[in-house]
Length: 168
Image (cartoon, rainbow, N blue to C red):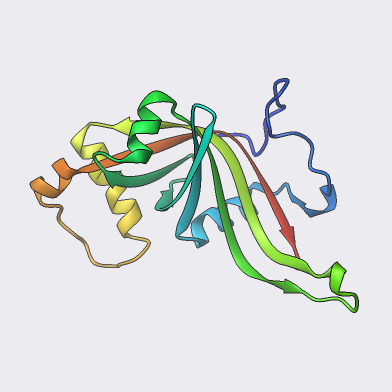
């Protein structure tokens, strides 16, 4: 099982949380957030140019999975640099205040770092797609071979992640 946080190497962006009273340290709560949302934002680096994209995803308790077309910007970047940052956030709202400058975002968020891995083995690919599809449908689906060939499935091996909440 991956740690909630890793002690960062020098220069790693997962440093100490400034508002540690908002940090989620309970792994079960982090898993709940990962299981309850459907959209994950992934940030990639193309040289010195950042690229971010939302994807549907699934979490199996140790890795994240998402799918994509076989080609495109996201795939081209990952082929060159498979490091990524991900963000998943739920229960958005506003925490109001008597002072306008003191309004804050109500949320539960998990941010993490990982490595994207292309899944090539068909049965592993189908298992990952079933995890993703199960987030949207109770029906058991069959994936036509031509669709499987046209689809990339990626696993995100999580290196570290942190949770944060406010307004609860």
